Image 1 (cartoon, rainbow, N blue to C red):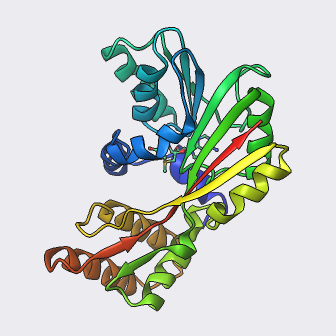
Image 2 (cartoon, rainbow, N blue to C red):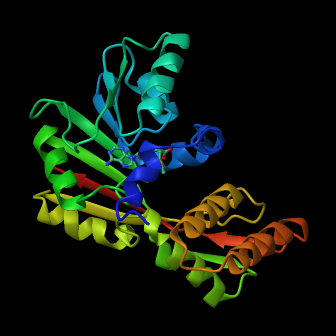
Length: 262
Ligand SMILES: C[S@@+](CC[C@H](N)C(=O)[O-])C[C@H]1O[C@@H](n2cnc3c(N)ncnc32)[C@H](O)[C@@H]1O
């Protein structure tokens, strides 16, 4: 197993997983609830760090309007190309710029940004402190990083036995650089020099199977990692799928919402 799998599985995405992500990263009411507290205003210059196929960046373009701008930053070249084509279709190419970035440096000037949104990406970056320092550089005084991250140790999937779920998470953790990033964000933001850091935790239990694609991704990662037998992985997935049919499912993935102001 490649030690940089946490990065490589984003730079190289096979077609089937690409299609799954396009559905998973669609703009939704859940995303709206998590991003509204960022306080983005008309005319703001905003960054969407780890923007995926671009749906959030394109939505934010409608929040900032033609007098503002959104920069989508992404490590996967196909997502960048896809985001650009949707921006064109929606006539938003003047308001959104998608950047393909592979070295962690933001292609933006000092003191130029009002808000950086980072949703479920800091778990993958090489060095979260360096990322926060880079965000600090490009933000104007009073600008904010609004980060949303899980913390895999705080997840559960009923009726999967706790040990089996934890074994799956451990095996799948090859796909994450910092699997416990949620609890670390406050400390890292402070260390990077942010003056004011607020933390809240958002949790909307899944009882209908909307997190099944996430469970399937975890199984893919665990298979790649090779630390858990295939049969164990299959059992966890089947338990979750069966629990949807029998209406017994309850998946919790608390999201740490951390707003750091420069
Ligand atoms: C879980 S997805 C989240 C996508 C989007 N933020 C959302 O919540 O819908 C993580 C995204 O971050 C990107 N990514 C991973 N590491 C990155 C890095 N070091 N710099 C920029 N993007 C990165 C991945 O390619 C992927 O598109």
